[in-house]
Image (cartoon, rainbow over all chains, first blue to last red; front, side, top):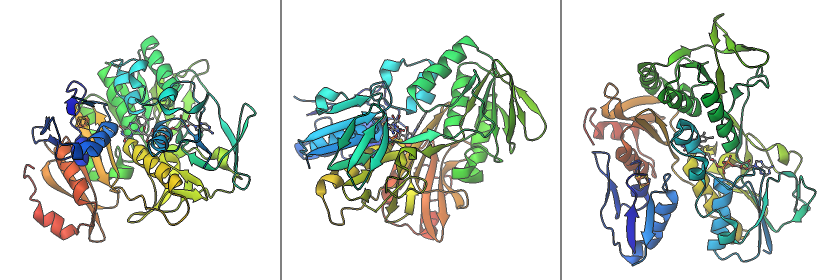
Length: 64
Length: 401
Ligand SMILES: Cc1cc2nc3c(=O)[nH]c(=O)nc-3n(C[C@H](O)[C@H](O)[C@H](O)COP(=O)(O)OP(=O)(O)OC[C@H]3O[C@@H](n4cnc5c(N)ncnc54)[C@H](O)[C@@H]3O)c2cc1C
Ligand code: SF4
């Protein structure tokens, strides 16, 4: 899976980071960084939860 | 279970329905909602949608389409009666549905002022229809906007209307904006942010009455003054939508009263703004936040499928955000007005900070302005009780993250 964030939509509220800190990090500059855009399958549940929790619908998963 | 009925086709109800399917429920799933629109998202209604940046198509909820969920959808249909003993919901189109499981997700309804007339130009903001009407009115009558109530919705509407270049008066009965939830320290910062953006703040004053006959022309305030108004938005909070449950046999007390696992009665769960449940740490609470509606919708659906027995408690650390101008307020936990408040990160003067809220020697919550990652880290920490002294000592004021 590939994690894609639409940075035009993202408002850096860090909810995804709360759900999946292995994949998402909002740093002190208030920008979101995707730490791992090809996370291991074991993280799929967490990433899917982050997709649902993002208030801006900014995260999507593409299958590769 | 053969039939599950979900009443309320919005955030909590749609998440509950999707979760029921995701967890393998393959019986009859009925989704009843009294709005005509496809399920949509409310937070943009006071922000991007009201600003005119987004159109109505952008606020639709993802995964809400009946086809993907295989639900029997009753749109524009109100549930009027619940009979707990008979396990039956009656709809306003005359249909009666017997159920094995029920999810109550009817959300909340705006409160109105005792003196509030049905007068053109006077608005509340809860639904997409409300937002369409308000936005059209602002476009047709771009004059002075008076917002009554400086809670989150009122403060956001004031900010968005300033963004539209309209003159705004914000009337609040309490001495400061957001003071009921966030107390004075943060309330003062929010007040300063609004006055810097040119909002005419009338604090500590109530509304006596409305002026105007064919259309609203102004408001009379409790201090004897009046304000002229072309458009009035009343944002004085919401009440859980439980009217249809009176006499049903469910216990109602500012919400549908549930056990720690969101069960209101055998085979009946509640979620979202309408649900009051016994949170293992915070006691009996009801949470009116976006993320809670999702998480509780998911929890309640799973709980329903789990059947009898005590069930897993629903024990989140509540989280919400509010956007006003370029400031992003976020709060976690249960901060309240009477708490001791200490800034542990950034500063009030910069309007970029994290403030901790403490009571009884324990951190109750954290509130941040433009510090999203720090707030989320506090949310993590607050999953377990954190001692006040330890928290304040460990975080030096002024330190940056
Ligand atoms: C303008 C606005 C801005 C917001 N901004 C934020 C924000 O920035 N951050 C945040 O955390 N939260 C925000 N919120 C709060 C958030 O939107 C709510 O917490 C969330 O919508 C609650 O979802 P819910 O499904 O419980 O209830 P609701 O969204 O209220 O949905 C309940 C649904 O049930 C329907 N219904 C009611 N009674 C019946 C009946 N008898 N029969 C059939 N249908 C019925 C209603 O019409 C409605 O469609 C905002 C809310 C508004 C209105
Ligand atoms: S949850 Fe969504 S909006 Fe928030 S930081 Fe993550 S991607 Fe951005």
